[in-house]
Amino acid sequence: MSDVLTATVPLGGPTLPQERRIVTSIPGPRSQELLARKAAAVAGGVGHTVPIEAVAAGGGVVVDADGNSFIDLGSGIAVTSVGNAHPAVVAAVQAQVAQFTHTCFMISPYESYVAVAETLNHLTPGDFEKRSALFNSGAEAVENAIKIARKFTGKPAVVAFEHGYHGRTNLTMALTAKNMPYKSGFGPFASEIYRAPLSYPFRDGLNGADAAARSISIIEKQVGAENLAAVIIEPIPGEGGFIVPAEGFLAAIAEWCTANNVVFIADEVQSGFARTGAMFASEHFGIVPDLVTTAKGLAGGLPLAAVTGRADIMDAAHAGGLGGTYGGNPVACAAAIAALDAFENDGLIERAQEVGEILLGRLNALQASDSRIGDVRGFGAMVAAEFVDPATGAPDAALAAAVAKASIAAGVIVLTCGTYGNVIRFLPPLSIDDNLLNEGLDVVAEALAGVAA
Ligand SMILES: Cc1ncc(COP(=O)(O)O)c(C=O)c1O
Image (tube, rainbow, N blue to C red; front, side, top):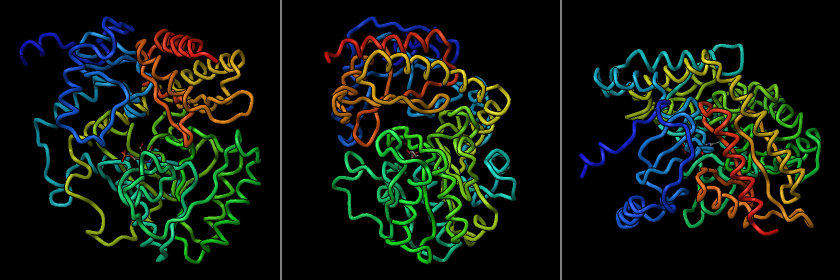
């Protein structure tokens, strides 16, 4: 069977035909077979959004085992920003995997880890001496950023925000705001985590200064700066609904942290690496975080994550206090060097800006003709539409789910998000071409029109 399968599987990467092509109902028969095996073999807690067996991906499409080709507006949740199976990433991985696959950086260091750290130190916001440490996942990076901040300040408490998402490990579940599906039944959670309100202009109507004053007052009254090691915030919350905070909100929080010996951590796991039309979303808000957590786009699809920040903070942890068996794996580092080179030198920031113009232009036009879209927001290739009941402004999660489902059935991968589940987020790979992106948005518009008001 594997010979037959190999012979019929198209190669991925940019050579894949860039077209939407639906030749079976979704899921098709081959995909149904795999999903039946999945149900019998894989833990039920591991869900999936698109009911297919993926066999190839590249440019702006994902192809399934039944020959269907989907327009990819999700990038595997903001991961394949350079494109799936980017040729430079593939070549770097192939060369490295033939050289050595693992020594453990904590046992026998190698150059590629150091090169990734150097590049991250240079690319992240802030003109000061920095250090980086590498890990396997975004959650692990966040855990380590908190460890480092606690060690540096000698203080225990951490403030996270409403609508925040930071991962599924015990500490990051505690930092994450939303109960279902991320936390329900998985407690008790890590202690000394406190939650502050976020700036959510569409729903709270507050300007940045007032929203920040509200949050700071709660932090001072309920936690106290003398107990607080770190504030962690996504400059644009991803899972929480691509909420763009009001102007001045993030800067005011960052300033308060600096004035109070509190480490300001920007979680750029979803928003980093050209995704928003800047190398990091923090740049849109003029903030310079003490520490930045990254993952997702960093290594072109291979698992790699990082904490990068001020050298004095990063160096506070004793030798052996940070690390892990696989953290900064050489194959993932080789992929990251290739991906980071593409981010820096292949015009991907500019491409994200162009993608953003198309996304915002099309979605704003759709909003003007359909009042069920309450808000359109975002930067670059990180843009979302929030669905509401036009009469009340109440979140309409059922509408977002129906539009996403119909879009997927018609061959366009879109993802929902938001605390209220009423947001569709658009995260195309930066390798998508304009025609495909526009066709994908046509399909979403048709899907919306097809759901009765
Ligand atoms: C902002 C943010 N932080 C942390 C994480 C956790 O990353 P991972 O799933 O790699 O553990 C995510 C994942 O979606 C994220 O969006």
